[in-house]
Image (tube, rainbow, N blue to C red; front, side, top):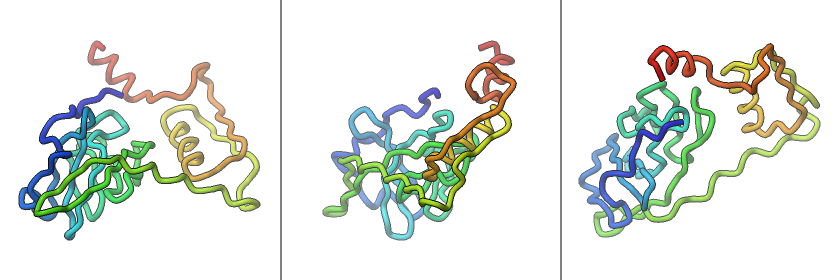
Length: 178
């Protein structure tokens, strides 16, 4: 994944005026060397990683829908409250930061701990899952199962000798001469 969202914009540890963030708006800033997206929605302020975990798209150029932000490149969807991935093609969450409001300013300083993954419910899941196809969809299925707490045996059947990879992006890069 290429990092396209650089750690630019205001230093959010020094604070930004709340009046600079209208409801439904976003602002990209930085905390140290990390790009952070601040969003205002329904009187609440959120701070999450500013870079999509799929291919590094700049979330500040995306769209807020409810309490989510959608990547402008491939429309992955992230929860503003938790950073969790709600829609593919991204499989991994973005980090979250704690937000503090003081004297009409918004400060972002500390990264919040990652949300714990759900525990596997004993006896309600199969002991093994077989996924047929080692392309992007097979990889996404395996990642989703693990992210949702599946701890059983997981087998991917594929004619490829290599591990799953994102074929569409590979072909786009090849056709572009990269």
